[in-house]
Image (cartoon, rainbow, N blue to C red; front, side):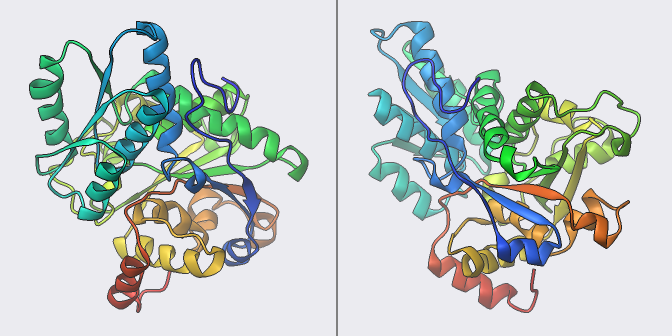
Length: 349
């Protein structure tokens, strides 16, 4: 799909992709920021969720009564109710008990019917499907990450990057955070559509394609655990502070994409993600939550060179261009950043 298009109503916007002098200096290569913080809901979720909801209305008919249901740690719920308001349809968001009061307040302010239940996302999702959706003939289930329409919506990000980076000499890698894997699937789909995935799957170094670094925090690392186990694996619990990454199991398609030679799965600590959010606010005057900080941190802690391009010398690496997906997130305030500084301040990113 082309960027900024929808089968019915526009529910997301095209976002800038800008060079960051501060992060380029810290990383030792050229860093560009794809600013998904500017989406209507505050995160990239507006793309996939909005596209799926618009497509559902088109499929069922604009005149048919529809009630949208989604389960979420917060950001997918915000995307759902934001799109529902544009599409003039009601929405119910089921969130786990771990969801912050800040997120619940934001959801209710936008008009969502909010139900809080379950220890983590999968329990909230089960309740939504078994107790709410099953009893509503007009209900439409909006999965927060595991659906082809979700991935299609997210893939528009790559279409935009293609145009935006054309006069910058292109790009060599994309870095994204992984929760359930919807963003990751969309990025891979977009890269494949635009001819950036190599044909030789025997060696990542020989593909010539755009590399992808999939980042998670330890304790919300369902993709990384699956990659290490060699099979789709479910975490027993989410122990990371990055609750927006809190899917105990990624989408099966995300695990399949992770087997591509262009992809590297990697983890970092909560402290590294949190302090990256603090440093990023200072450097770029943009605040993001720790789920996003997992990707941003790679520019601060040397991960891009040591993990993504380990075969290159320092001089060779300096010529590379990396696009960081600043995926956003609304579970963050200045007060929370101050708490991160107090708690993790001795652990600079």
